[in-house]
Image (tube, rainbow, N blue to C red; front, side, top):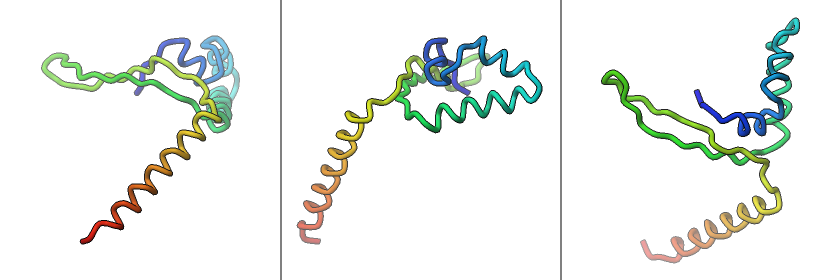
Length: 101
């Protein structure tokens, strides 16, 4: 489970809490809500900031996760970063192959 602030959840889902409640209240509402959510997250990659911390309650440890921010990925910037990562990995591969065993 992941806790989220309202703004981050609305950005991720593309729906307000009221719109989710309206969808879910209709016949086959749960299926309609899941379809609307899947349509949104399958089409638009998102950058999600998740903060975690270890909490102890009644002597039991558990991890708490909180989504503090979510926004659509800038495809141009993300694509350039991916290409840079690939280039860096290729350079490492060439350097490691050149070293004697």
